[in-house]
Length: 264
Ligand SMILES: NC(=O)c1ccc[n+]([C@@H]2O[C@H](COP(=O)([O-])OP(=O)(O)OC[C@H]3O[C@@H](n4cnc5c(N)ncnc54)[C@H](OP(=O)(O)O)[C@@H]3O)[C@@H](O)[C@H]2O)c1
Image (cartoon, rainbow, N blue to C red; front, side, top):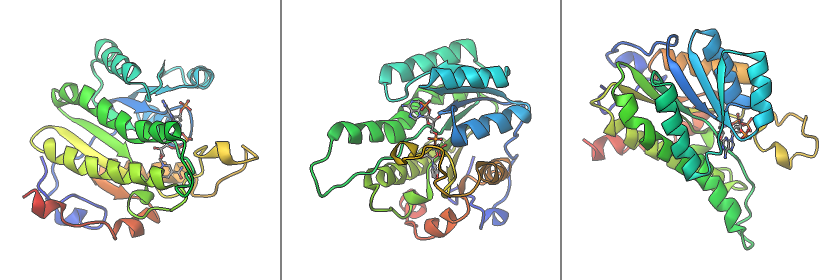
């Protein structure tokens, strides 16, 4: 589908455009839809006329969302658990075979001080949620998506994939790894109808890391989630496969540039 050049916001016009991703009439599975970016994507995509399925661990949140938006399909799932991931994929394929888009969004962000003995369970947890879960879910749904006329996998990475912030070293490493995996996945799927997007948010005002804030209602700063969604939707509908939103674009400029040549 695409050559080695990855359409980004800056070079997109230079690349011959194929049919661009439609943003209505899809059936979309979003991991981590109970708050923040996942929930805002779900609401926007529902409004645009897509079937939307969200999952998360907090059943009460899922029930509240269902009450507010009866059109959103909900499923309790802890993506940290490989068996739950397998059940989720099987359930989706059986009950919603029309699913043609996977948004790997669920994520957690932990502070880790590498100068003292770390709690390995926390580290495993963060790596499993942010990296292994999207890798595994992608592999579980890839053959299903390949059979669709048009389909997509959308990975939510971070500006911190490109430049780490040292007090969350594992988080940044998972996002750098997700960026790398996305490049490889896009290459592996290049002869198929599956478009592979990476969207790297800047700081967005969500619940991410709220457990470490004394006042849970306190904003952690960052842009409003609606502003982020509006930029992310522009990337999707214009087939900008790698989109670093806002200040993430600056960070992306510093990334490695060898991928195309070594995979030529
Ligand atoms: N906000 C930012 O500044 C920012 C910047 C760059 C990248 N991102 C990325 O954007 C994505 C969404 O984060 P957010 O900012 O929207 O944060 P958020 O408001 O905390 O949302 C995180 C979502 O992930 C879900 N989740 C976490 N662990 C899960 C698990 N084990 N199983 C299933 N669902 C799980 C949560 O649902 P439950 O708790 O109900 O399970 C929640 O719906 C993450 O990948 C994050 O790294 C965010």
